[in-house]
Image 1 (cartoon, rainbow, N blue to C red):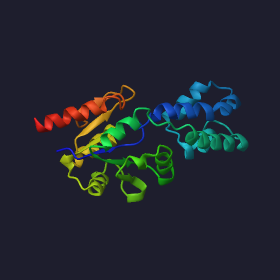
Image 2 (cartoon, helix red, strand yellow; image 1 turned 120 degrees about the vertical axis):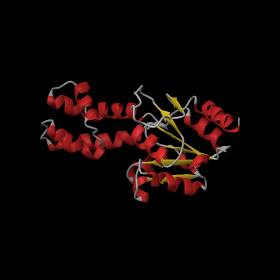
Image 3 (cartoon, rainbow, N blue to C red; image 1 turned 90 degrees about the horizontal axis):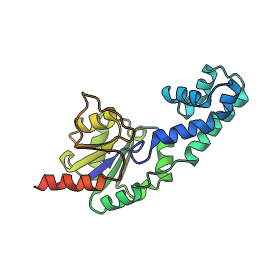
Image 4 (cartoon, rainbow, N blue to C red; image 1 turned 180 degrees about the vertical axis):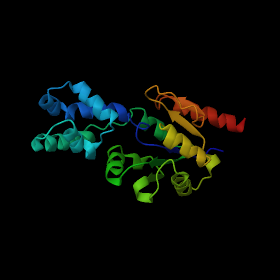
Length: 223
């Protein structure tokens, strides 16, 4: 019997990649002008190098920017616009409300508290979730199965009574599989599932079809 559904946060409950690109375009505009380079090229370099907020100053220096004012301004702009423009998936409130009426919901997210808790507050996720697990706060991160077990214990459910919904084959599919939890893969950007990754019970492009998939899974359990 299904009793709980666990969710990843980044690129699952909102489109992290689209948000990341938009923020980089805003933050790096001055730097691109200073370097006399194409903004899209600079954004692509930052995206490929996985430049988050704290890595921005060193990234700019590596590109040849020595003006400390530009570095500080870009860093501050990136930080500010990141949180000002975060947008929850428009389907999330409806989906979480509907699922929360039938199941216990949990959030399991990797990252520092200052970043993840800011997103959780902005999206008002505490109003939907019965348990929220942030890796820095529990001292273990996905794909370690222990963080999934912490969430299961918080929700008082067994692994086979839960589903995990997440976007990362490495962190979410592997981690959930090691904890004995079936998973649904959120594949927003048309990625290929690694051949050695655990098979999800379903693949979705976003949250729109999640309710129907959960219903079909439950029918399969009882039928």
